[in-house]
Length: 243
Image 1 (tube, rainbow, N blue to C red):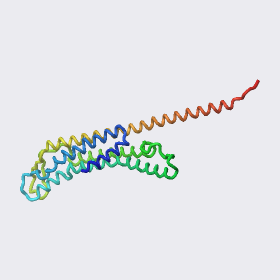
Image 2 (cartoon, rainbow, N blue to C red):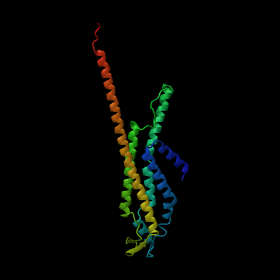
Image 3 (cartoon, rainbow, N blue to C red):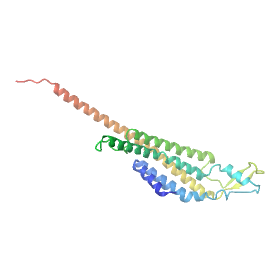
Image 4 (cartoon, one colour):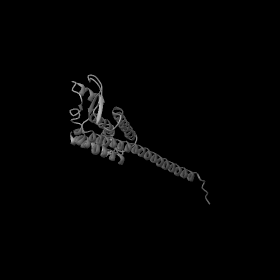
């Protein structure tokens, strides 16, 4: 893995994130990506080689392994990490688009003009992009958690499984290598995913609440400004009497 490239992406996303978003990034890259690359991937590296069945029928062990594990936990988690991190880069791309528009605007109207007060400030379309990215990340997280539980019916790895698919001659018993260690990592990755879902939901509520408060303050300032103008116009309309 190219850690410099990953660090660049992390710093880019972190720059435009809220406090909840920064915590989410830390959980993803420290408790999920690093654990996945350093430890979990090695635990499942010899999974198929140590999957043992009490039969010597040619092809039975491979067929049973494919039947019990239609997709490896490692590959499923790798897809999950890719899908849940990609929506965050929508914000970075949107900010880059704003900066390019700002550059073209200044080149056309002069260096002292500005199209945005701050291209990275979450207002207008960028606010919607950020909010949509949070919803997409949450949907992906919940979808992969459902898939993991649906495929394996549990997050716990069994010690013994049974298989009777062809070419196995009858019902055979197969044994999973290091089931306790794999169960620990499974629960750890699921727990980290749940924490990320909670952080995403908290950030969604935070963004919506902040937007409502800003709109309320903006409406209050607009009302106060209108009242001031009304009072001034009324003072100008008062008759004057000269002695």
